[in-house]
Image: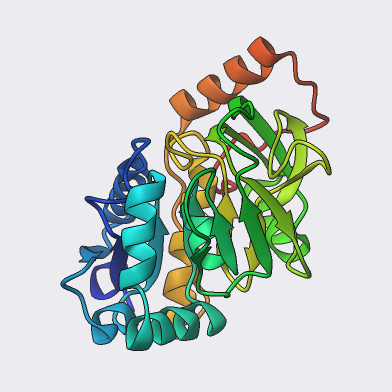
Length: 275
């Protein structure tokens, strides 16, 4: 099949409620990078008006951040058949990127600084607790080394370099992981809780991270991994993406590493190796 015959549906979780930190940029990045390769792309909002069948129809899922009030609305809506459909999609390998508040949505629960515990979907074995209003937030630039074993291997195969992610974190909640694998190791910043050096989580093909602002324009090779994985899962065939010109993204990443005085052995500098 040619690229023009392949279709990709992006499921955007609650666009009006969970786009606090400009994370619509993750949707745009996936959409544009797929279109530049001539894939047919559709963005499907998954909100209060959506059904379980809508969730089952998507090929990649994107979730952003929200304030506690909006997050509670989302968690109340995403129940029953819709919650079951989300669990099934992720368990069966549908890829996704969940930033800021979305990982809390996928965990067992989130305890806000004020108010009652908000139950999550229980997809990821993690819990998030806000220590209280007087607790200092985790804010600032973030650099992590991807350590989730399969993801790290696949990203390195795509780029030819050990994968590091650049981002920005701004969260009051502290996340503790259970048996779920961490996305990465904190090189610069605070990560999940500022204590154990972990950042994010990785399960099946779902990437969960506090890195937002948004994540994918700063790390376009991750967007390519999502596209490639989504097409492979959907069409059950090997997919190799055509390289794109990412010079500006590469320069921006190098500038950030220099600014933060982060020294890494090798840094992913291209989204796909030149064939």
